[in-house]
Image (cartoon, rainbow, N blue to C red):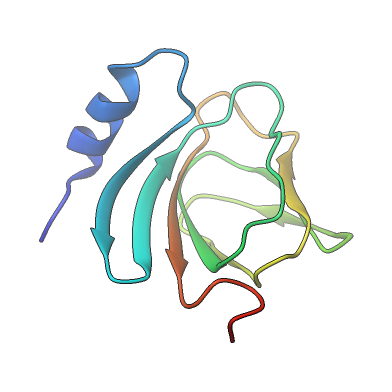
Length: 106
């Protein structure tokens, strides 16, 4: 299975209100394209997740720790941990990979 960045962004652009689009699912794994606007309003998720930054830069707050990020970086967040992107550029886009059993079932 393959999804190109162009096709994923087209899915996202098809619905101007939506900030993410799920593009692949298999078992407990899913892949989304995510493009927050102005403020990242995420809440903790029930699965572990990886972010692979496609473009842009900013700051990533992960369990209270703030780090700078940029294009090509990979960020990990364990299930149930508070996290968010802040001070990100207008062109910021990231892949999000959710995987594993939901928190509490590990």
